[in-house]
Image: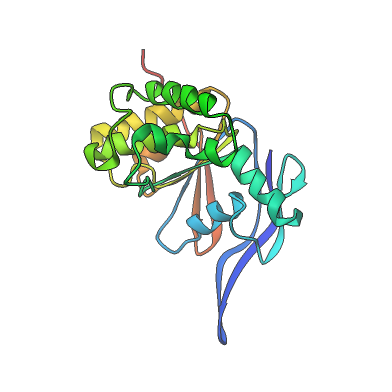
Length: 230
């Protein structure tokens, strides 16, 4: 589904050159759940940004379903982000003056879907994450965990096949963190591919596979033993 072919990312500032991601080749299968761990500055977020069609590699190619993302025109690359990729961030990025349901509708507004369809789907998604009684609340009226659940619902609005999560549990207490990971596991079991950057090893254990980055290179790949609870 996602393929990295000898991908390298270099940032240049005046005479200095910083290798954010060294030559990397990787296959990510459809329906996989991958956690990416490693110290700060190891290239985790750089890798996620390139997979999300937001930052072109300096060398190499990234293919989605056999198509080279960064060989597409800018408008078609934007369509890939809008229609195939959902993003979850540590900071939620909710619009403070909009209600929960209005925040969830944003991707559908951008996709120019019918207003009635927008509202119906937003209501269903908020119910899916247990916020059917908080639809008219603005972010400041919600707990941190509830805000993250609104962000999860918004991420699902255009039914993405790929979810990219950047420290999705970073600001959460242990109980809420567990709840968010349960949602991500559920989304994966529905067939979505999930790639998650995290510093949290317990969150990484929820993934099917863990990649460890160090100084811009993948230094370890581990298949996780997933424990199912009755």
